[in-house]
Length: 289
Ligand code: ATR
Image (cartoon, rainbow, N blue to C red; front, top):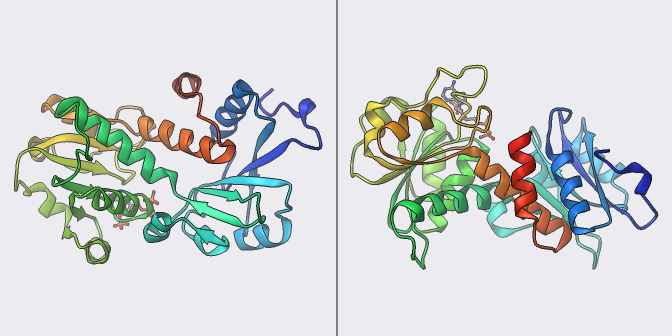
């Protein structure tokens, strides 16, 4: 039912989810339903891969038209593609691979960053300037918690949009490395608690703190949240974590990781198919999963 196996023909395009593990992923349900709804002759299957470089060189037949790439391969995959989109290259992580029809080369993209940044931009427009033409992040102070793959994507994305970026991380050294790379400011988590340079700042949590089952944890106290006008969290299980609940209580606009998930999946669908993503269907499916 999910894969439509009976409808696979010689000209059916095959897409795969590369990761380890992959069994829990909702992406096959989402992408197969989306392909079907727009009449795109393709199937999307989970691929449990042990060695990414070996898989892409030995088993990746031209029948594969593209892949999603998830943990733990988002960073390794950069070195396994023939070409990398320039922003994904700066971030150092990809989550989408397309086989370019013209020459069969594998090209890597990062749709996580587009999904997160566009969700936050709309969250800001909603609360501040609905008619903004330039990015509403321009000139704002944008604080990222976490310096892993997701933290890097957000820090690069916000810098690209003209924000001034500060990175707070449990391991200060990693925050400093990332800050040096993007020309930002590094903080410890203790410093983040006392960080109130200006009202109206934006906060983006990219750590797993607060994720199921540790739903009572939060990366920053409610007290320290008062300086932020917009708070985003990349976690989507549960859909609203403690950080977002407390941010809302202190009057901030909140943007959930569910919004990022939907948007990165829509962009991925567009790269796969060259067609507009069926947004309503993808939102309905995501909310029912
Ligand atoms: P991802 O690619 O999803 O960003 P990652 O590269 O493993 O995942 O990075 C996880 C981030 O969450 C890191 O910034 C990590 O902090 P460290 O650099 O100190 O490891 C942060 N993180 C994870 N668990 C945390 C916790 N319990 N408290 C604070 N930070 C945490």
